[in-house]
Amino acid sequence: MLLYVTMTHETVTMGRPNWMRPADEEILSELHEQRPEYLPLVANRLGMHLGYVERRCDELVEQGLVEAVSEETVYRTTDLGRQYLAGEVDATALSARGD
Image 1 (tube, helix red, strand yellow):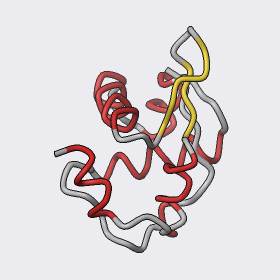
Image 2 (cartoon, rainbow, N blue to C red):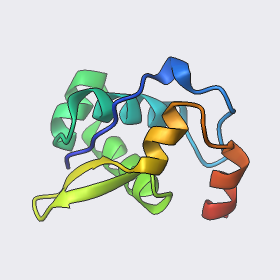
Image 3 (cartoon, rainbow, N blue to C red):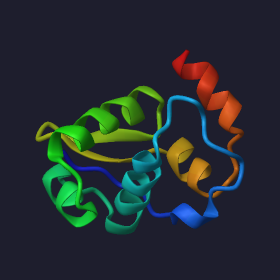
């Protein structure tokens, strides 16, 4: 899979929704920095198991933070994902989407 996020994990200041795992912010940040990217490369760079990254990306897609950009399962962050990383989104608003 390919994901994209450009903000850094340190900019997140509004808390983390209950569904979100620490790895999700790392994945978002990696996608933001690398632009659209295949998940095997993301998993390799972050030292995470590919299956775990794929599951977390499915959740990030469901939450509207990343999106597919090709039929080859290439993803990038959405405006909402970039706003979350910039600390512009209230974490409770994201929790409500996933509950």
